Length: 187
View 1 (spheres, one colour):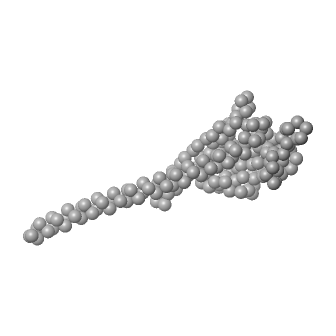
View 2: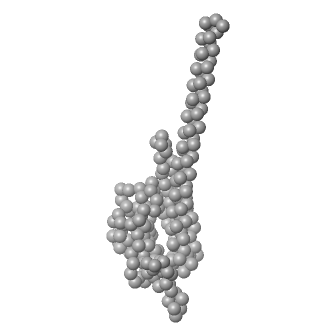
View 3: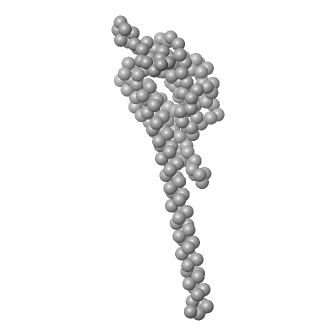
């Protein structure tokens, strides 16, 4: 082998190594992006399923929808007491409302919180009352939230609940997703 042949061989191996390195980086980046996207989708699915399951046992007439105001918030009455028992009136089987369930995004945050307000209630919260309960207290439902929406259809006892999230991968790439679910009220 001459020196020229050896230099040409080294040059070709260097180019092939560089191409292989960039291909591996692209695969790694794609994997991390798909992992972040899957995590965001899983969080959305869990949050939507939990909220819709609670809303089903409520009534469309007990919902307060402030999802288009600041901070975005929704509330509805629930007949589940603090022990997790669904309470009904023994004489007619109607719901005995035990608490307000409030979901909201506190101002300046990207976290969806859930809060229970116990008491004897008969009607929905007013918008002003709902805003007063949106003070940063509650249990975290999902982080990286960008939107909370609710569209009520009292005529057929349904509502469309929507959530949006924005996740960031390790490389700083942002991924935004939104999902919605239709809720059919049982009461």
